[in-house]
Image (tube, rainbow, N blue to C red; front, side, top):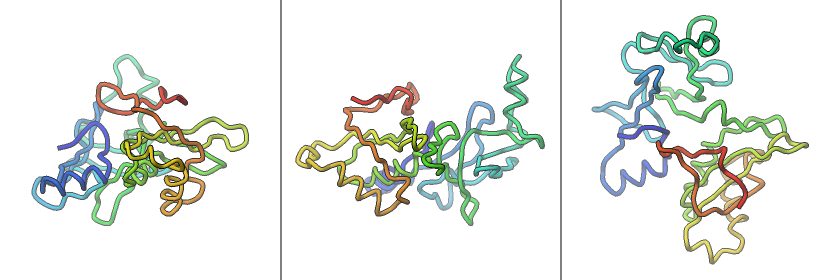
Length: 216
């Protein structure tokens, strides 16, 4: 099983190749407990967190924001009425704070958090899409993408990468990764600023703390 954050497709595939085991990904949070799950017996899809469990309704709202309702959803935050009001839509759906997509089979894929959205030149960019693609390159051990404030563009897409030791032989690793990304992404999504770092700051749950990413 996998939890805390969406598992990169490259990692899911690598585990499956080495062990023959297909990781069971689920999705939930404190306010809702478990929302969706890949099946115990059935097709588990890489890059998805499965389908809504019985009793849970799920929809995509404005900007593909993931919204949910059901008996599993909490009633509100203790002594925080304003936070509770902001957490629910006018028709009673809970705003998870995540952005996603749903395929033809009803499997949910999480694209990112609404709070992580990068707006560059008027275009919306969600870091996870870029990170998943960059992790496919053999030079990349780990990566995080954030927005760097800019007067002209609003934000500039910026990549922080942990590179494989073999990358020392590549003086043009930035160009290599930019070409890799450009083959798979719209031009506005390709990072224009790159930093090579030794590791990425993470919290106790293993999630990248993006606010602590600073140029080396």
